[in-house]
Amino acid sequence: MANCCEDKSCEIDAMRDSHRRVLWIVLAINAVMYFVEGSAGLIAHSISLLADALDMLGDALVYGFSLFALARSARRQTVAVLVKGGFMLAFGLGVLGTAAYKAFHPVMPGIETMGVVGMLALIANLACFFLLYRSRGHNLNMSSSWLCSRNDLIANVGVLLAASSIYLLASRWPDIIVGALISGVFLSSALNVLRQSLQALRAPVSSR
Image: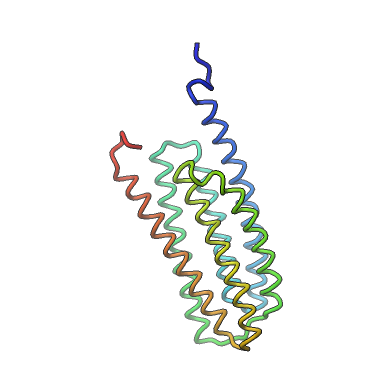
């Protein structure tokens, strides 16, 4: 009689358990950093820190949906990815709106707080990136989760560049520009995830 490893069910279960552990870890990291960066962004009046904090919250929700999708059918996983894409789109638009608001309500951000918290967020997101890297090609669910982590690194580098530019130029505009650029990354990724999930939903059942 064939055992579970011969029909690949053992391998699939092991991969699913591995995905679950990784997703719980990165969810916890993002949830903690949301509160850290959000508080720091309010104290420092930094749009880029607030944008990155919203990204952390969005990612925590994204990883939660990914955990929900792990034990579901391929179609339900695709629907979960579609919902994740919707969250990414909403947060991207939210960050863009906040950047526009800050452009007309000038406040000089606190660069020391931006630098310290931005570096802490970069370290946290590097950990998430490498945790998700090995699983990125397993399915659309894990691929979209890794994409969120990659975007986080881009946003973190942007925060640090904004802090440096504010110090050198004595201007609030680098913070606003970086916030707008972060929203652009969100929107681009969201549209990409939505496009892929919609294509998967439209595909014949036999191909999924």
